[in-house]
Amino acid sequence: MKVLVACEESQAVCKEFRRLGHKAFSCDTQECSGGHPEWHIQGDVLEQLDKGWDMMIAFPPCTHLCVSGQRWFNQNAPHSKPLHLRDDAILFVKKLMDAPIDMICLENPISIISSRIRKPNQIIKPHDFGEDSSKKTCLWLKGLPCLKSTNIIVPSVHISSSGRKWDKWFFDTSLISDLKERSKVRSKTFPGIAKAMAEQWGNLQAAKETK
Image (cartoon, rainbow, N blue to C red; front, side, top):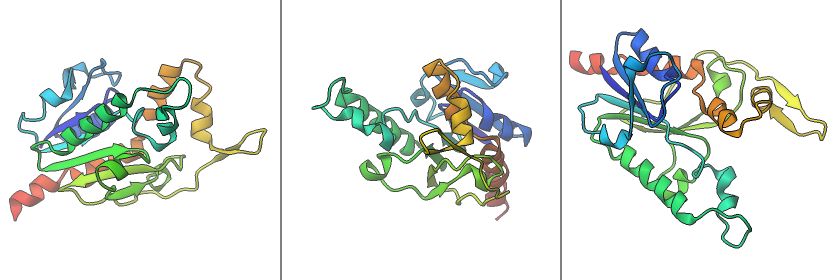
């Protein structure tokens, strides 16, 4: 199966599909950090959407989409962000969702995609896939079934000096001082989720062809 993994530089999902024998390619404006540049398309993913893909799994940047960041678009507040950044981010998501590809998954945290486009088909948490985190992740699906949990665990919690509870995973990665690098680490797909995507969705094309 020919799989496009959009907005992915880590190649976490790409490598899981490759492990199962699929012709998967990551695509991002950045160089890949997953160690397989031969499986990476560096450039604008919108230019790749009509290349005959069977499936696309997309991870559009959440900077201007996540609910937690919407306070920066309050035009009455100092240092507010220009509204066109949010509008451009929504338009980018719409173009990905409308791509001429039969099977699509678009992933993002809790975001304004739900109010500006449509609600997600599924909300998952990494600890349902064996990962030590409770971070909510939304999936907007087209032609794909919802993911099934694979290994449910109880995530670790860090309690700060103020008494606030954090994911231990989130707290640990926040020790990275460089803001861009911290954002990159936190946006990487958890291995358990990447593996579930490949194993549960990777055989769908074969199943369709045998019917």
